[in-house]
Length: 142
Image 1: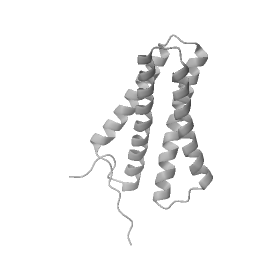
Image 2 (image 1 turned 90 degrees about the vertical axis):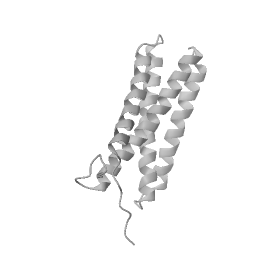
Image 3 (image 1 turned 135 degrees about the vertical axis):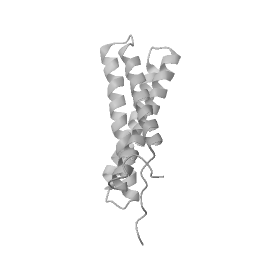
């Protein structure tokens, strides 16, 4: 049985994914930069964003590797999911206990989730483009 041929993502989806990542991260970081909170608190939220992006991409890669039959150890797979869940728990706990307005909490939460989703979409696009082969990068032939 032949392996299914992977189609490269459309240019529109690639662009939308990158735009969502830039918008989510940009908004989160701009809001964090201008926040009136202690530097250590800003550092906490910055590290949670970076760790969350890494964890989301790691989960996407581990899940896809397993689907495609690549060997992924159980401990790595479990650590990927644990890291992603930990990031969500940490951002939730941090925002729940933060002494900022509810609207600010919602802004951080939404830009955080948008950033995680977009990072997974960008990673998927990069992988699909590479898997589709040379000459097909970034656009579907019509």
